[in-house]
Structures are given as structure tokens and as C-alpha cells.
Amino acid sequence: MARYIVATADEIPPGGRKIVEVAGRSIGVFNLGGEFFALRNRCPHQGGPLCEGKTFGLLQARVPGAIEYSRPGEILTCAWHGWEFDIRTGRSWCAPERLRVRRYEVSVEPGDALAAAADAPAPGLVRGPYQAEPRYLVVEIAPERGSNRAASGATSGHGRGGGRRGAFRRRGWSAAPTRPRPTRWRRRAYSSSRSSYGPPR
Amino acid sequence: MATTLPRATTEAPVRPAIIDCDIHNELDSERDLYPYLPARWLDHLKTYGTRGPSGASYPRFLNRRNDAHPPSGREPGSDPAFTARQLLDEWNVAYGILNPLTGAGSQLNPEFDAALATAVNDWQVAEWLDPEPRLRASIILPFEHADLAVAEIERRAGDRRFVQVQFSGRPREPMGRRKYWPIYAACEAHGLAVMSHAFGSGGGPITGCGWPSYYIEDHVGPAQSMQANLISLVVEGVFERFPGLRVVSAENGFGWVPSLLWRLDSAYALLRDETPHLARRPSEYVREHVWFCTQPIEEPERPRDFLRLVEQVGADRLIFASDYAHWDWDAPDTALPARLPDEVRRKIFYENARDLYRLPDRAG
Image 1: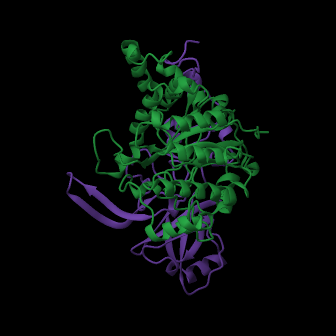
Image 2: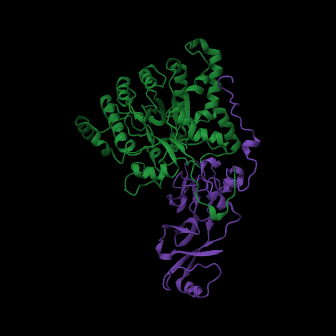
Image 3: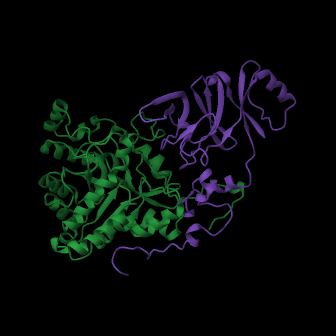
């Protein structure tokens, strides 16, 4: 578990956000009424810059016409297609069970404590350019399992079959498996001569 | 096939070259066209403004990607250098086809519509095609007025960077109707394709049964209007009369194509004598003359359904389109919801469009 100092606490006002590069990842850090949340800046749908999208409240209607608007500013919509994600949980609103964006723990820590820790660093604490006075936001990044990320980072060309990330991969939508394996189209025998209309061949 | 690379060597590989068949070059404002309008029509624009059928499509449809704002401060899609960087460089686009959606083509004043179309085309040449050799463009036409449209085609036909003409998704009459035939004759003579781009309207609603309430109905609606246009093109005998004509459908989906053609072929067997000018089954004309842009891609829940769909439509009928910089664009490497064989991907992302638009090969 590596810890990274990404901002001072007063740098991101309530309702604000900051996009940071940490450990080779782009991450969005959000302030919801004084609470901080961090999400991976990559939409699990098509890979868009999720954290650069607009935020809205939650719009619901238990019955048609009875519109409820709640939790203003807590729903993030992807900058590309508008997929909605709950900033607090990282879950997709439309497909919460299968589609979520990776979230990271954020803590607010006083600078003097960090300075003390820097003298005797806790495991993984990254020394940052900080001072004693302000409070800092610290994001915790777990090492990623296996080499999935490394592989996906190297396979973005369409000749590899393209690839959706995150939950799509886990559900078998993947086009860039980490190990060579038979792909769906092979097992299902894609055939270009199977069109059921058009001139006889 | 899939290889797992050690982390230390994860440099981004060179992406395979693609052809993007639907890129939107936008105006920052109508002022961009001022230098290209003759004084008479510039005065008209400033004095009378533009006027087409109103309320035909939701403004939401023109929303742009949030991350596509150029540093110049211009509107997304309106800065050629930024489009080159964010789209063409990023995705190794060998050719990109421009489709401006400006209001030219839908003006109710015919002469002004023609002048506006000419201005848009001159703007495309000067500000997009001349500086950027990877770009090609659609000719914008006053397509409701065939004589004026043909004059614009003749004006552009010598410039091979124009690869097609653009129709809106809902012309005032279905696309196969006789009033448009002079346009098709000119396109066939000059080797230009005809693109029907979704949205835009001559005044009709997006459904066949009146005006809907919500934007989502507009968003999925073009499948309906394109079906009407496609049926019309086939049964009016356009492809019999203009055997060299190529038609491209953009942003209209393609999941509906197989079932429509099944129905058309069945109906043709029953009703052939009504349209004796058709020498072949309707599906045969479509398989030879019509291509479908992929965006916005069909996203069935089960990947195998997507594979079946591509089989049914025919992998040679599909051409990749990103729709940059509109909000519902498709990213080339993540858009397809299932893995296709490499040779099929190559067709969809490159070869089909290269052959359709007769572009010199740049894949190497």
C-alpha cells in the first residue's frame, strides 16, 4: 500500500475536484461537503476521462412524474458519454453490480504528522514537498494484481481487438485477455458467409 | 495474438492506421463563414439571419465531449490543429471524413441555402483540407433544390478531397424520390458517394407517428428515418437507374438492417409487379450499394449477439466512424463490444472505407 500526498486540503473546495497523476494513474480527487473521495480517471465503459465530466445531483422518480432531486453534486457523469457514477462508491448508477470505477481511500492528515513520518517513514509513505502548517490529502494506492494493467497499457491498438476495461473484462467482454485463450468468436465460429440475405454465394 | 508484456516495456505501440468516416468540423460561430460569403449574402445573413424548420432536433444532439475544448478557447471541433492532435494523431487516422453540420442545406430561402452551402465548402477547403492532408470532406448541398445542388457538385467535383455529398437524415421527401435524382446522376458521374447523416430535418418529426417528448427518443430515432430513406432508395429504383451510386448511412445504427431486408425481400416476392423496375431482390441492392457507419455502436449485452449482427449485416458493409467531437463519440480501440477476427477489424476500420471512397492506400 503506497501513500501519496496529492494536494493540500484547502486546495479543493467543496464541490471542487483535482485531477492528479499518481503511480502512473490519472486519478480524480473530489470534495463533497468536506469529505474527500478519489476515483480512477478512466471510464469502464469506453475508457473516457471520467473525472473530467460534469457532476449532477441524483434524479429519481419512483413513479412517473414524481421527480426527486437529491445529493446535489455527488453524481459524476463521464466526459464522453455521460455514464453516471456515484462519487462516494464508484458504482455505476445504471449497472451498479457489474460496472464500477476503481476508488481509492483518501485521508486528510496534518502536515506536521507527515513531516514527523518523513523522518521515520511509514512503509510506502512517499515523501512529498510539504510543510508543517496546512493539512494534506493522502491517497492510498494498492499494488495492482497480476499484470493486467501492464498488459492493457500496451494493447490499445485496434489490431489487438480493442478492449473494454474494468467490469466488462471481468464479465467476459474482454478483448485483451491477459493470457492467450480461445476467444468467443472462435468458439462461435464467426462466418462471413452466413449472411441470411443478399445474393446467393 | 494476445501477449502479456512485462511492465518495463509497456511503451504505447503504433496504432494501426484507421479511416474515420464521420468527423465533425464545427463553426466556432457563424462569423467563421463571413469571409466566404459574397457581400450580398453576408448582408442577408446579418440582416435576416438563418431560418430552417425549427425544433426539428434537440440541441442536446450537438453537445460535445467535455474534454474536447481546444486551448484556443474556440468551440470543440472548431480548431483544426486541435482536432488533428486529439483525434488524427492520437488514433493514427490515415483519412478522416469531415461532415460539417451547419444549417446549410436546410435553409428555407433556396438561393441563400445555396450561397451558405458554397461558403461552407469554401471554408472547408481553406481551413481544413488545405492545411491537413489527412482530411477529406462531404460536399454540403442545398439538396432540396436539385438544380442548385448539381451546380455545387459541379463546382467541387474537380477537387478529389471531396468524397461524397451530404444529405440530412430527414429530407423533405424520402431519399428515393424523383426530385433528388439529378443529384444522384451528378454523384454517379463524378464518382461521389451520397451520405445520409442522422438528424437535421426538412420539417418532419423523427418518428413515423408524430413528435416525441424526450431527447432519448431523438437519439435512437434516426434508425426509423434511415429505414424510410433506404426503403425509398431501393423501391424507387434508384440503384437500377444509377448503378454506380454508393450510399453511406451515418449515425443511424445498423442493428435493424437484417430484419428490414428480410421483410423487404419477403414483401418483394409478394408484390413484385407493383415495382417491375426492380430486377433483383431489395437486399441485393443494399449489399452492393449501401454502407453503414458504426457509430454510435450497437451494444448488445451478450457479445456473441454483436458477432451475429456483424455476420448478418455483412462485414463488408460496415465502416468505422468516431463522430468526434460529439458527446456520443466512439473511441476506436474500445467501441466494439466484442472481439472480431483481425481481418474483419481491418475491413471495418480501414479497408472498406478505403475501397468505398477510392482512397490511395496509406496503411503501410
